[in-house]
Image 1 (cartoon, helix red, strand yellow):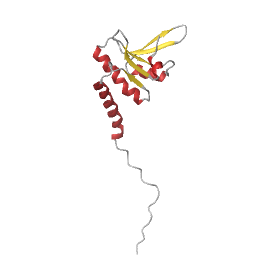
Image 2 (cartoon, one colour; image 1 turned 180 degrees about the vertical axis):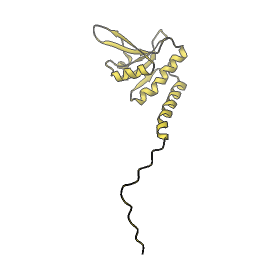
Image 3 (tube, one colour; image 1 turned 120 degrees about the vertical axis):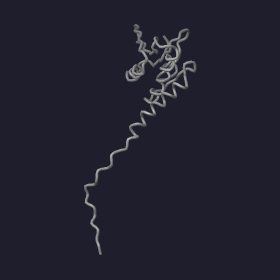
Image 4 (spheres, rainbow, N blue to C red; image 1 turned 135 degrees about the vertical axis):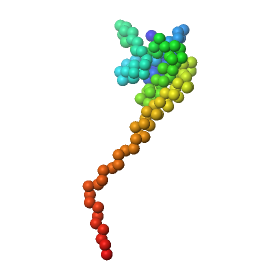
Length: 135
């Protein structure tokens, strides 16, 4: 079994499995659980094959989605993975610029909301103000 993430030196390789309609998201051997959990949270389904040697783990987009939804789900995961600090590659036949840009916009909007609220004014200083001398 080959692993594209190991071969390419990335954290996640997103591609369509040859001779199928399945979109895969490969992670390197021994990928941290944090990365695998993030892919789970983003809607990709974890798959595992246990062998006498290593355990192979990868993610796939859910099969019950139509082809367009599968591509959108894969592309919407990319910005979240990048923001989390992972190196991601997506093949051109899977990449959808519009879905990617929409996900980027949503991430930026979520980040902007907390900073849009104004901080509370600083509490008055407990130091007394200097007295003014009058002539």
